[in-house]
Length: 183
Image 1 (tube, rainbow, N blue to C red):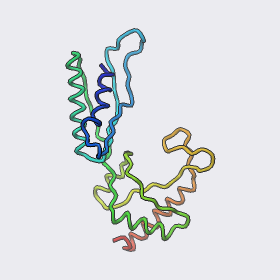
Image 2 (cartoon, one colour):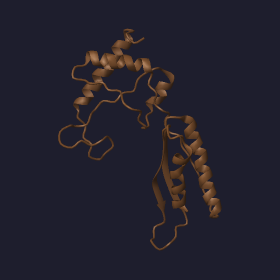
Image 3 (spheres, rainbow, N blue to C red):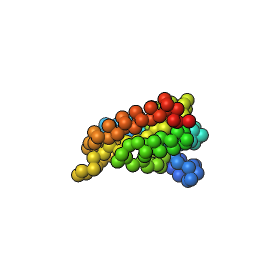
């Protein structure tokens, strides 16, 4: 029953969401039973939904419960569905972002400012951006020597020089904002 739920949940995005919109639904944890020769009497599935659109998130929450209920009803099982909404989407203010990029290009030597494609990471900074126009930025911090691993990888090793770049960027932006250079 648990595997049926996972299989059906994995089809929700591909069969229900416009392919030109972004959404990810992943079951990342599945725990059931302790013995190889006993059918488990319960299972716990844990996962995540990522999207840039709150309407899509709400739709997927509704459809997830419908799928889980349908499978459990068909197999005469009970279920408990709990969905905890994480952080909202980070949305940078376009004007502030442009000003910040120009300031960084003008004032920080050996710094390359690049616009990135949207990222579906979770970030509490999104709450600030809902109330005040601003910009969330990344500072490249992976070591170039040898092998480079992404953030959250167990072998990631930060290039500590990036912290100085980030501190300078924040300092320059603060001074520009306080002197009304950001309008």
